[in-house]
Image (tube, rainbow, N blue to C red; front, side, top):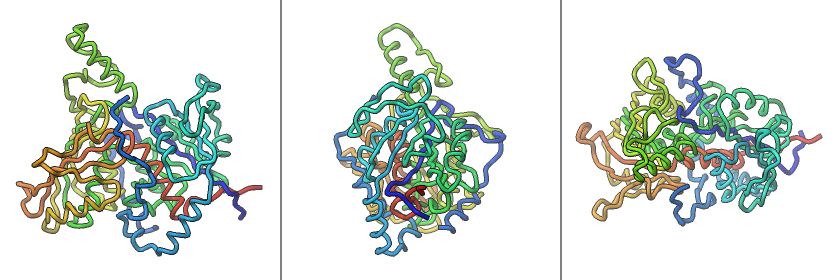
Length: 432
């Protein structure tokens, strides 16, 4: 098999809607996470000026038993291969909230992007978009064959679009690697669901990769190091999710509604995106309610955490998801019961050393995770660590905040691609 000097992979990133996902089968059907063990076995807003370079996000120190045992010389060879290989990248939906962040992450990525192509509908084809260091780019009309020509394509589109086109783009010897941010393939046994710091080796098993739900990805960044240290027995989570979870339309509705109320134009804001007016309110309802009384957003956390971490299908994890009137960055209160006794100092050390995590836990100086400080940051903030009054020595409670559009979507997708390039599962396309 001959390979060119460029490699193709396609990122399928869905636009985040108020329902946050595509319904797969019956709403009451619980997807099995048994595939996780098989995969593991086989392998606009406040932006901080802090340096967020992806090059500083060290994939090589990922908390993954497979990665930890990888031969260092092979690592170095893979990294040299990645750095010497250039990629042609395409983005569909680059004007959406997630699509914009994908382009931003690519601007800072360690990957050598030789070409960036933007695909869109007939409405946007022919227009031009500012792509940072890649310059001004003319939007092309999306076509599967054109996408398969690329080395990198991001689709910031719906789950329906993913179901229709993802496998077609990935199939065959010359197909692209597809990284899909919708919920369309998350529970399919043949599709790895990946957070690179946890199960990046799973990317070796498939050319189609699913990106997790934003809430799951943020929470697992904190849970995984603690699971390795103390072994999780059960998890209780409450989430406080920003308007950005509903994409740009959700953020726009919050902004306009707040303005209307503060100006005296309305007593209560209008709502079209959210179930109820969001300004000056909280809404304990994200996505559709299931037969068991939980919403699908809440069940996504349970289903996806089990699959990504290789936990049992009946591992007890419960979530209550609440929409709050912040612009972006999701917050989570997480309570865990563990098999081993908890050592708070050891927990802090593990979190300090975990890639993609920033420990913010200095209550004497009133420093703790907040959406205000986590917005625009690549790292997930973790703080308020203390032993649980409920579970005693075998329990811990913490507060976690992460940028939903970055760690929960665009950043994770780009890191998946970087991991595939470094572990050898992303190779150059064949040429005639």
